[in-house]
Length: 338
Ligand SMILES: [Zn+2]
Image 1: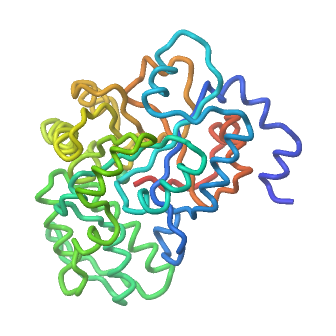
Image 2: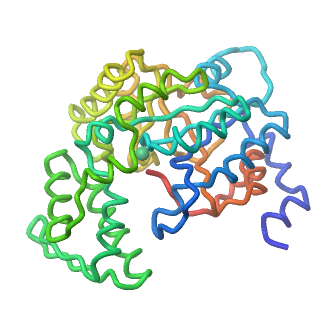
């Protein structure tokens, strides 16, 4: 019997519910895709079957699956409500329309997508997929950045993971868009990978974004212009990233944008300064990726709403441990926020 099943069998997780279980949950996904061959970024996608199991879990446990509008209402209302959950997807992947939507339609369940407008406009790099593609084609990755020479062997799986982690750190430390773009050009130099072809392949087009926004089960929110770690940027640039993506998304779908998610979204990339700036952008709520349940006092922190990221390594049984607050208390999984 594995650890999750053993904990569930003992029922010990239920003891945590009054303290950490909260009143509801926000769940974060990225992609719903049925081919899971990608190595490093595999944790960003779940299959349609898995998605269905997760929805069924909530249905069977009599937890309301709600839209962001309803989620906001329940958080800000003094009335007691049934336990609830809202499903969110980050970045704006095409498979949210082609793979996720049919599953949600089947169960008549609402969901939301936080769109990075630079991905749709093909001006922002999907760096994690680009880097992965380069590493699959090359045995070595070399570049000179900020007067320092970087050489990464990328032959074995372990070497690829190490290189990916170190380059991720360099990317997340970029303080402005031009430095970030320059770093990406250095990484891409010498490879035949064309950066924005990936956006064509993986991301919603302008028309598809509008189409998705018109679906009665779907709400769209913003997710910045360039998908950078906001905490590394100047206050002015953070405002541009948040407000700029809200304005651009409004232009694309012709609707007011009331919701936002911070890229990466842990306490490292999004803190008090970012919450304050989001609070000045006429939003109703903004979401982090801090793994917690929604507390009764969440309305006091409406621009830092936590979300539990679900990845395919997590058995559906494990969700129960999160919902009870047990896993919030003792989180044993690695971070997979993008
Ligand atoms: Zn993201």
